Length: 170
Image 1 (cartoon, helix red, strand yellow):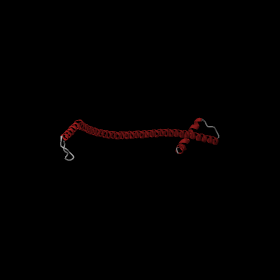
Image 2: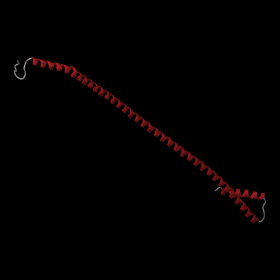
Image 3: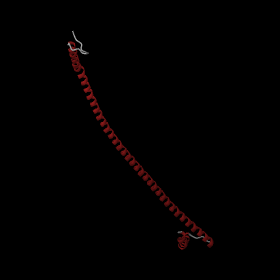
Image 4: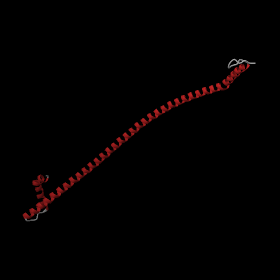
């Protein structure tokens, strides 16, 4: 018979209860706690590796972004240079076109001036001849006789020498 001395009785059942509890703890430790701890360690390592990998990828992405921004700046600078060069070439070509137009207009003006001078000389010579003919006709009427060509030529030369050259030049 067993004697109860409070809540716990110290007998064979107590010994079996403690032994069962220790066996249960050993079994739980072996089959539950160790695998769970191993799984938690592996999970912790996997998370740490993933965080490290993510950090590495973030650093690489940051480097790539910086590289792309640098390349974009270089491309913009190059594009600005190309646009500036094209504008300068267009300005130079516009200046060339304007200069060519000025040269052509100067040539046209010079040719027109030469033509005007030629026409003025022709008109001057015609006017001179007309005045000389009128002077002969007036002289014929005054003299009353018809003059011959030799006499006409002598009178024209004399008339031109005396009065014509000084007055006709103006």
